Image (cartoon, rainbow, N blue to C red; front, side, top):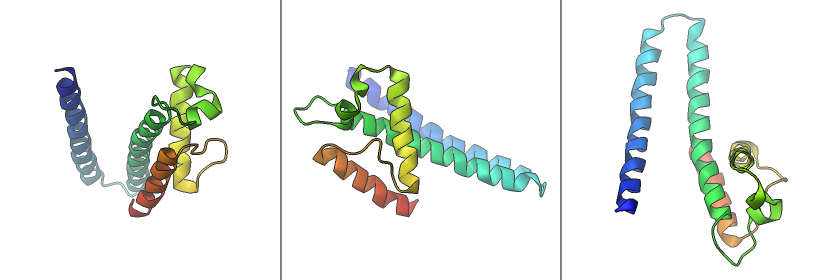
Length: 127
């Protein structure tokens, strides 16, 4: 029953994203100022970028923190003993840098991590 509840909560969160798109469309339509128009557009892109990076970073950490006999990026970087803040910020940092070509500080250490990084790299071309 717990897994079903978790799935329902995740679906509700995804529905919020759809609602957020509707809100952003309404705000954009109501702003008639030439000065505020570009600010709204940049804000929309930033919100989308941060949302995608958040989910990507969370998945990246979940893959790295999984229980496995393989070496993971979490182990290589020593993040398994650090606080949630450091773990989240490292994962978010990695996700954000994927939009600009990646980073050298955190890198895939297992085949699954490499596959995920490749898939993210390919999906960035779509976005």
